[in-house]
Length: 265
Image (cartoon, rainbow, N blue to C red; front, side, top):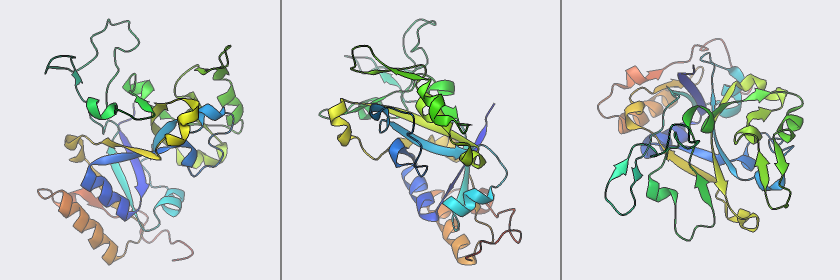
């Protein structure tokens, strides 16, 4: 059972995360792995939005080098998001979960953004709310040299040629080339629906609110051999956003201090 997850990023992005109390989901075709969409039809290549995290609690030198050479590693509970109540039409009342039978596939459907933010009038696309937490919002990546073939096995074109059927909603973003296995990645994902001719209107990202109670459990580890200037910068960001917290309880120095130095440092 996954409990904690880790995200490597730069100091500026840390400040935005803490100030806005949101996590950004980036569009699938804009990921740094340029083979991500191999094995998929055109209509699936831009419709997923991802937030990528690491499972391994041990610091990863490739992650520091690629994503935060002078940044931070954020640690948070895997359930960092909120579940917003569902309004009952024609009333001012709300439900905590969908009013369906236990056997209904949408029994665990939830909204990680406020309901009325989810559906915008005049918008050319819509986001599909996750069907459940364990399998419909977060997925552990599987690495294989035949990742494109694996993706192809999970989708087929409908007989009328007007759509795609998937064996599972997460299948297109679950498999990656084995070259990326060092990432030990877990992904949160959302799917955006739209007409094929409207795909150019899809945004580059969507921001999802963090549960403010979960923010109390955040840990921030600074990059290996962090300069005093950058350490103070992170400390100031923490102080600006957690007025009642002790930065020394939230911040940690890298366990790689003195053990790892980038060649260009």
